[in-house]
Structure formats: structure tokens, C-alpha cells
Length: 130
Image (cartoon, rainbow, N blue to C red):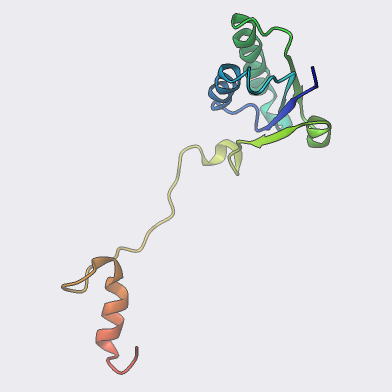
């Protein structure tokens, strides 16, 4: 069997087990030989937990021969990979609170398409402008 390595950048993500489940379910179409989970050093504990869970999931489905490797250097993780997947959050968990940027409140400018309210409002103030 030809080696089929999948590298997952952001392998410590809580979404990784769902991704792994999808790979397991499609094993006949995608006979993976190695799953390389790569994350930042500060995510070491999380990626190690996800790797252990991945190994248990594979074993439960009779796929214990699939290698699960953990990496903290991108070049090492993707070397020889057939596929490279990403699932990362920019800013890591600093953005986990899902802080939202303040939004300008848009008010409808009368009848018509309310989504274009500011444009219509502008045109109303400057009728000579298109």
C-alpha cells in the first residue's frame, strides 16, 4: 500500500476529532497511513490529548496501524504529506471569547431596500450626486 500521510495544521483544535471521524469513515476511499498533527508549542497539552484520543478512535475501528504523530515544526509535519489540512484560529484562544468589533448601526432611510439605507440617505442629501 502506498503511504498516504495527512498533516493537520492546528491539530490541537477541538474540531480535530470530528475531522478524524470523517477520515475513519472514509478509510476505504482514503487509506491513510499517517496522521501528522501539528500545533504551536503553547498548545502542546491540547495536541497531545487530541493525539491520544485519535489513537483510541483508530484502535476502536481496527485501524491501529495508522501512525499518529505530533509535531511543533511545520516543515517536519508536512514533509511527505499527501494532503495538508488547516483548522486554526488566528490569535489562538485569545479570540475564543468571540469579542465582536463595534458595529455602526445602520438605520433605514425610508421606503426601499433598507440594506442600502446609508447610500440612499447620502443621495437624498446630495441629489446632484449619483
